[in-house]
Image (cartoon, rainbow, N blue to C red):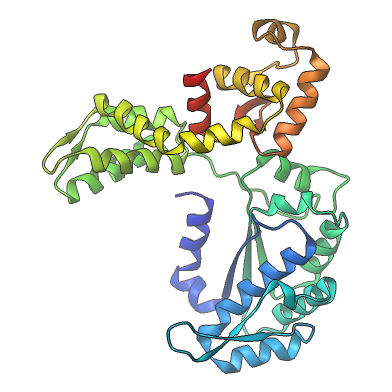
Length: 331
């Protein structure tokens, strides 16, 4: 279970479900304050729609800056409410009203904002300060800020010069322990009349450092490849991995072709190291025939901004583990 699954799992717990209004907002695709406010407003609005007109009317009685539209349902032909990006005419005003709505809700709220690191790339550089102030004064709500880019999240919350500095309790989600994962996987196979060896689970887990999404993707492919009453064992790993990489081959080619030459060279070098440290050192530059330390530093900055790399513990990795394998195989 990744961070998103964990948050949703918590929201479904009876204590939370009955005692709080819960809102899950994914802002990965946003690139501005307007789009952030739209995602937040739409997330709350869509959660309220099934609860009836009373809740919707109250929402719009407070958030008066929105001009909601109607469209016809493609199946029933009935008019339905729809909130579009074009309905956000005054983002800061709408944001203020959303926080007023949360503060006045008749139950406490939990608002989870996923991929929160996106706000650092918005053109509106004061958004962190605006949000920090509003969150601080919204006593009726608890906020969960989740992100997949650890170095950016750390900068947002741990840098003394940033508004969110020391304003939250940090929680790092490490890999699910192998000893927990193993019986879970074996149980799922056995429920469907199949078996899987301990060694296979261990190898797949190790291949992806216990990263839930990739481990589950591999195990799903291996499950499909295993016949009823069959045994899933280590020799099947390469076939499963080949199948998965093959489905991504065109995408990876396209992504890689768009990178400048210097960034391609850095990506290949880091992929070969898998966890690269001292990337601006003379030894690393010589080993992979890179240009210079300053050129590598510039390339790293660009690749981090594109989310092609991730940085932690002083080292660099290719963000997409499958892309990392593809690079090692092809270069």
